Image 1 (tube, rainbow, N blue to C red):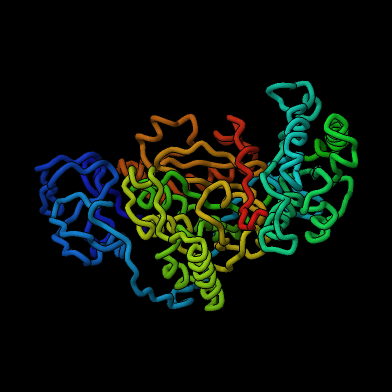
Image 2: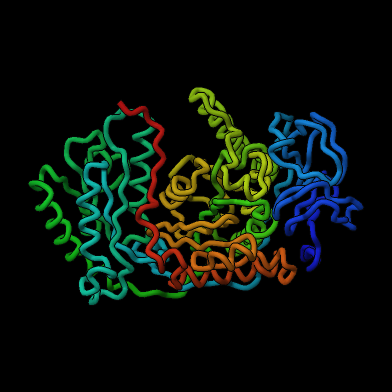
Length: 515
């Protein structure tokens, strides 16, 4: 059954019968009568922000989506703006009810397919790059110089004979040395680099080091079960004889790799080979109403076709995790998720930080007040199917269906972990506007509102503001998005790819003490 559409001329949206607030569709001025709520607006309320529908006493819980998003920090009158000045975080009991709502997965009746690149081992790629990875920050400059030699916008002749190669990209980082060689931080970096080194979207990979760093390439390869081959080559600046010789050596090796990389062809494969990383950044008050539910509807279709979706950003499910644990396939999966929440609470405590340091300034300007509110809207990206597994950062994703990967909320770090885990497509919702890409996996961006779409359509791939405008239902737009994701996986470039985004956004999670 389709979700009801907001009325085309409605001034506000009520999301749940038990809510204490409604969401403004446009700017509300004092005295405006909201007939559906029987309330007059008291003061100015910006688009995407919340208006109280009843009087709320100090300390009382305030609900949106039928769930607690915070507690009144002062008396709130009906019709008033509800935001950071009168709504605050607070702790409350959450019933995790592990696996209480798990149910059998509904299988699609008609097969969906895309045009993918099937590797020798049977894994399916959505893109065909040659990658340059670095073991340490010290080799970043030479890696970029090698990749720049093959840039189509600077040296189009270098890849002219290799039309099936999407490009040569250098993914560099700022870590790799002055850390505990046995610590968790280096292990995470190595796991991330290992995931990229064997990612199906890379036809072949170079790994370049300095030579004296903590993150030694032989140990990196050994810990990740990798070894040098025609597809994977590694060397260091010190062994090669300096910067100039290293750049020349890297160019020579890529020239040797290009003919084999170019021999690929796309073929029809089931949608079950699609692994989508779910991201939201620059969120606003509409994210949990339009783009995130639309993405969730597409995820439900993907799961029905046997595909995989990776929900992440642990600090941004905080306070809403009980809605995911109820959908866990087994109680063990639910407990894994709660364990990651507890890890984050301890991590923040020992760092002198707090879990409620979200939303960002842009999120607040867009109408989000607390991390509880942001989390409740964020988990809508995951649709409604069972949560089948929970992974730590950059671990290989083996399960099908909806899974969760523990990552920070910062989008480049989070998406980097998802791609390391095997995501061959990233789907990114935004309400404030985002300029983001994620090589070697294409990033597809959804605007939450039509005003953003009109202002920044150069960076957006789909306007989910049509849900707010009343011209599309969540289910209709979700089905359309699913078809668009299949087209993107088949090689249709996303906006961020057209702009050349992706190399700078590789950001492995660094949690080590640097000495």
